Amino acid sequence: MIVAEGTQKVVALNWAYSNPDGTLSNQHKLAEPYGDTPLAQCTEELMIEWLESQLQNTSAEFDAAIQQRKEQVAFEATLAPYEAQPKSAPTKIVPAEPAPEPESPVTADIKPKRVKK
Image (cartoon, rainbow, N blue to C red; front, side, top):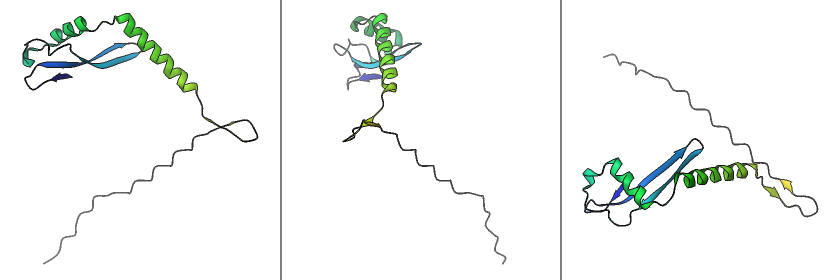
């Protein structure tokens, strides 16, 4: 996504970096409304040049951030809530089973009866 001000100057770009382990994305506010390039002439190639000149991260740093997030998610998946007990060891909180979905009503195409005249 491209964010432009009222005079059609680009002020921010949404970007994403992907590798086989995931995607990292953000919005980068350009250092200034970037030049006098009309919005209609802002090609993907030009906007990538702008990002590369202003973002200081390398692909190795993006890869490391994706790996760190992947490890964090994996660790969080191992966490379980427990409830303190006054006179015994904490007990694991077991989430309640979700309520079953109500059955959807049966529908049918009903043709109105013709009224005889």
